[in-house]
Length: 610
Image (cartoon, rainbow, N blue to C red; front, side, top):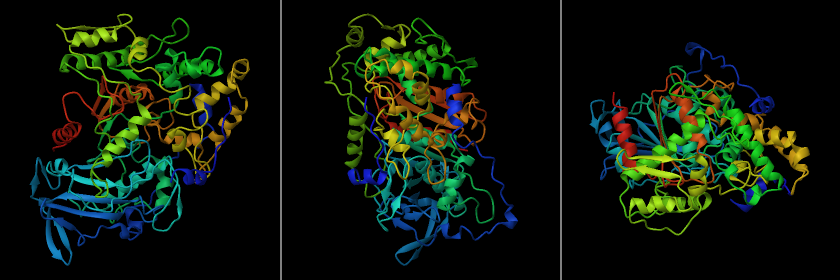
């Protein structure tokens, strides 16, 4: 197999404006010790004064009773003004405004109440739109379209621009800026610190910041939720001139209060092994065809994932989650296997007990991204986002209408019986994960689903650097290539050059001299939540989590969300974790029995009232 070499990321712009992991991690810089910070009385309290929001520059939408500002630069030395700005939308009663030319000078109306919240209690919600790790442009125009559900509930709504997976050119200066991990998360952390720097001027409880997003934005939300105040981001934040303390010298946090993620496309450490264990091992075509070296790699990665999983220390209700080796070395038993099977059965039970028949499967990724906040985001762009994501993620088939529940179950069991439903208990039972995978979410991508063999996936681009548009990043793959090359070279398609290409990519550094492996660690929530990793216990983790995921996604592994939920439930200080796998849905925000936005607003409203 020929492995393409990486090209310059500038060139790309012209085309499209368990011991294993530990050993590889040694290539990266380790977790830094908390930085030694000066005391408040010795700090330069004027250092960040240019980040103070101008309270006499508020605009007012009298028709809808909304105060707003946009184009707010949230760091002192932005890499790009095209992205690193934000907009703030405030319910009318929370401010008292005095006319100041074309704008208003505003002060907080402390006694005002909107919905369930007074001005000092209002949660701050932060939407993230992109679904394939593209950036979110800074808002430059105002529109009330879509804001009503949030503002009428008494939320402060903050729309933040942030960089995406690729480099680009700033629209103002035509200067090159660097994208990729960890810059998207770094930008968002800088914006959060900006809000807290201005906490005394703004209404809302700035301790209760709630980011929300779907797809890759759901992944970014999860990373934000797990990495609050992590010192791994300090140097990156410093390059932006992000505020580290307020005007009184008090430290500023970039931790968030709650996380709402729909179908987060996380790419955790060992993600390619996870995909092979979860669904790749049940496929025998294309790159998994007998006699190919990639089929052998699939089996090796599957086993490596199981072995690494057993070292993570994950639990469920106090029971250690582990995998047991079964016939053929496929690790299809153990408490972890039963944990996943139970989640799948719960999703099937919810679907079969609540869905109204006749039922026609929905093959579109509805309500994906498209959150309001930028007047330039036209109404039809949400549909464009959804179609782009759908084309990139889920295989499409001609929908069939099932007249009754029994018709649907009979169709699932067309070749043999693997799923049953008890109408008295409203419970579904599934014989095994392999049957579920084979029938409704068979592997749709080849071996190395995340870290593509030819470095051509969005994840490869996410871990590129200033000089390369895409880089290999999965250390588990390199380990298997190195250990088993004598076996692979006897099989079809082997190209020995892949080993050196992969190794060189993992060792490449970014502008801050951090390796690809180091940036991979920074971007894995589990790195901060599992005692198996050095980052454990060294970040402020959000106490509230709500994760929904389409169970029929076929280009990512459900293990990411399942592992994250298990780690969160066992993590000290986390108060609520809800993981809801949705039967019949791929990459989408669709939920059973509720509109996703209405559900989100209700969750925040019910959960965060003092």
